[in-house]
Image 1: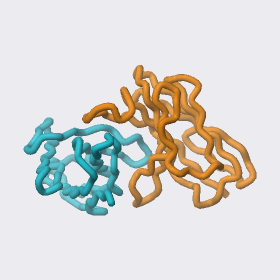
Image 2 (image 1 turned 45 degrees about the vertical axis):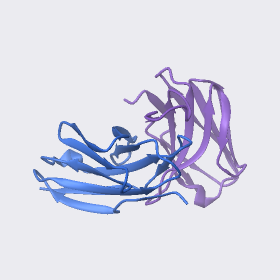
Image 3 (image 1 turned 90 degrees about the vertical axis):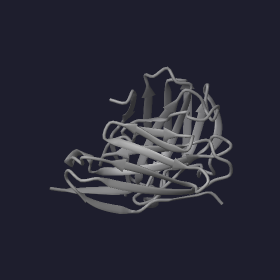
Length: 109
Length: 116
């Protein structure tokens, strides 16, 4: 079957760096998405990776290894507003999104 | 503001009530989706519409009835729901449905549904 695994919850300190991991098993692969969802708000698109390597967007970076079925989202210089859930989703061969349950990130001062 | 607007934001209904959720997208997209989000569970895809035609019904109980009058509007009609249907219902849109990789989905803020 198809499956996405990501940690349920992580805690980090303001100003620090945190890495949120995601492993996936899908029938075929057409890329991996990361979304951010603040409590009570819409999930918003953060990044899309389809090739191996690191994509950087300001304080956020996303990495993909297709051979390992692995991705991570790296958040630098953490701010209190980064407290949110981070959703990982892989796109299978039918271009259907397979979602993880999300990682709740708690930032402490 | 994501370009996808959902109303109402909160809804409490009895198990014998009939209510509807509404979604409107202002992004010029052709595909629209209903997702169910429950605590600590992955997003569950319920329905997909592409150019107003339903392209996916993910084994959703008939007490949920979608309607897509045009590419910009999507409804979810609710009747005789169960308490376990209480969840956040997210509407989303994208340029197309499963047409290409990198097809980014844009979500509305959701409608919190409580069935009592």
